[in-house]
Image (cartoon, rainbow, N blue to C red; front, side):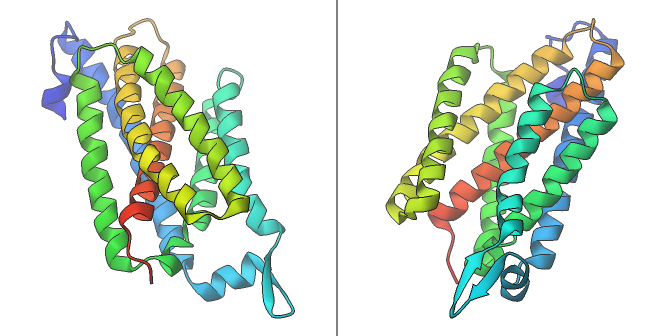
Length: 242
């Protein structure tokens, strides 16, 4: 990665060093969140835990309880707060929100361990890491302006989000398969787009240290969310169910 960062876009040793430090923070936030979510999902990914804490038994059936909906929808509220209030919130508060998001998402991801085989989860994770890393490098080194593509991809993301909510109630396997296929394209594309945007910010010598730390955290958060969504899309397409 150091060799990639040391390109002619950074016209001084100081700029190259600043870029390495900036992206070091971005990936530290991203990998830290992945570690938290993964550890929680693995630890609590059992049928006993899920049915005990996220469902209430009504006769012979299980009905989602309030905690289930908190874990399902609270991360969305946190993400909106982080993005919309970044200038008003302190770095410490943004960090706490990010940590809370990764914990909640870890509990949400616990269901994959009772749905898919451990082998397919592991293999899909490494496939996701390969695809993600490739697109991140492409986004960093490309000279093509990805802004227009980013706008199109975000429209696709909104479409996926709306379709996902609809399918939450419809529970259509066919629609879920289509969402996952489109999701692979959208999330890999957005990875390249955001890497280019982060590189542009790294070139901004006028940003204060506080601004750099906040953008590094939000950059890590965005890449973390894209990685998780790409992983889930691939897992739904190719994962072996138990």
